[in-house]
Image 1 (cartoon, rainbow, N blue to C red):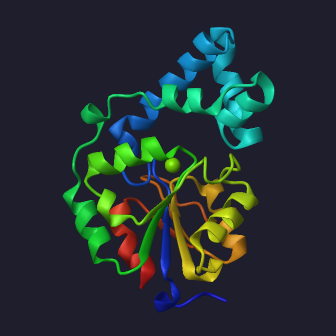
Image 2 (cartoon, rainbow, N blue to C red):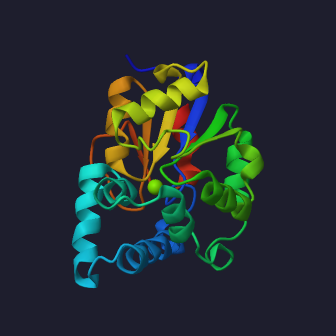
Image 3 (tube, rainbow, N blue to C red):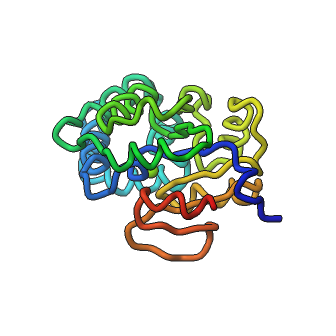
Length: 214
Ligand SMILES: [Mg+2]
């Protein structure tokens, strides 16, 4: 059964490439840091890095969990290294995003496979930190990350009162929306191109979100 608009009480937002567009270059900068970490800190031959990253991303959901499982990487060291990027040059205050979020009455929560420190910096940079009442990050999920079904169950537990049917989830990766759709959440795929079926809604910009909540 599809939930009606006023039954949605909680909005779960992915962070990277969802609150800002992929064209910002933030994710590309993080990707370059991940490659450097794998080569310089883990000692993986440079020519194997790209294939291994892809393999870990598919098999473990994140590169981090692949590196933890196979190379004993310390998550704090990894997260600090890969998120050490020049955010000031890549992101600016987004007044339209701020206004759109302010008009939505629902509780707004960040639900990200990144860590709280990175999420906090991105939110500050965009000028929307005050719009979010909670950050559910990789630490609060105990390193169980999207799209693992348990990550969504843990997020619901951390939210306290919300049931899946009360939540809408917004993410740029379609694969992160399939498990929550099965749980009964309303799913919104933010992607500048795309249009594949699979989520309840597809929008090209986060600014179009209100139309998915009516
Ligand atoms: Mg994302």
